[in-house]
Image (tube, rainbow, N blue to C red):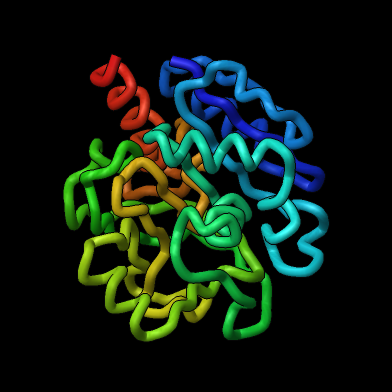
Length: 232
């Protein structure tokens, strides 16, 4: 299956996302933000970084890039789309996911291995996990605080759109400890932590077994490939 990873000016983790796709067994397809061609991919990843230098608002300018018109259209037709960190910000700015992301409540950039609880396993990207499963995924952001008005927050919670929730510590002041969301259909998922940095032994978070052995993020990429095969 072909998974497109879009590079924007300022993307930092596009190559990491491509590698994650390959390690999961898929074909990674490099896409450019200025094009309108999705090149017949089966799924899309919007990677982390600092698109357009995070000017205006994180992800705001990137959400108007030419290729995002195609992403919005494809998502509306059911194509799986994953937004990681800056990509999550793009998804909220493009109104593919509700709410928004603001500066961390402590005012500082944070980088840490973050424990998450999987809240929704009915999506293309999370069905490989167990509901309530706790995983560890690297987190690195300066504007990762999730916000939404009370009505929107109640709807998100009531309709089960919280995909991931922070455990033990809320690193950025996100409302209700929300770390990631899904749309109602379950094909679009966004999260602030970086699953592509927890996909390979020797390069992931530390575990009780050994250093750098955490691969909890790989399941996310394997899940979407399994979903695509099942759909074919």
